[in-house]
Image 1 (tube, rainbow, N blue to C red):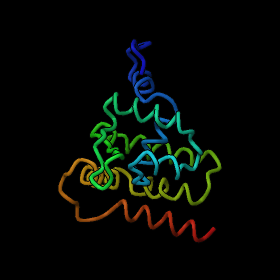
Image 2: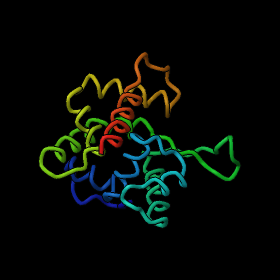
Image 3: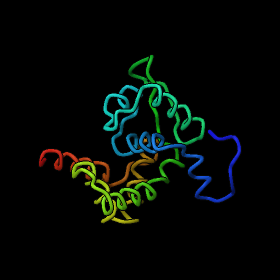
Image 4: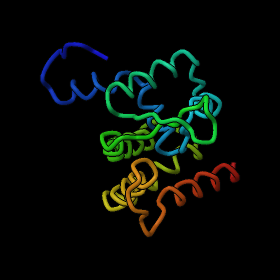
Length: 162
């Protein structure tokens, strides 16, 4: 992580805090793919993240307070990564990035379907998704609806359609 900020601009500070594209990809995979272990993040990476890059980003994101790590109760040598409140509050930013990419670039259908649903649902859906992420990662009460399940079902349906 940077030790000194280049400016006090909030956009600059956010970019310096998040690091590079791999940091957002790791957060995306934990957030939307529920990939919580190093092995799962490495094996299921659509972009093919290198093991050393993944290890470095997990360390950076944990040190910056965007992820927390806890021992996996099912396996003594594994750890489980969880989003912190600060990372959960990135949902609107990621929703906007996904919507922009869907409109202006050429994403695959299966990998853009979640972005399209989040754009259509807008802030009420983002809030519901953040509440569910708080349940999954922070132990908050379980919400009545599962946005994660709806996003996952749409993704799986798009994969089958291709």
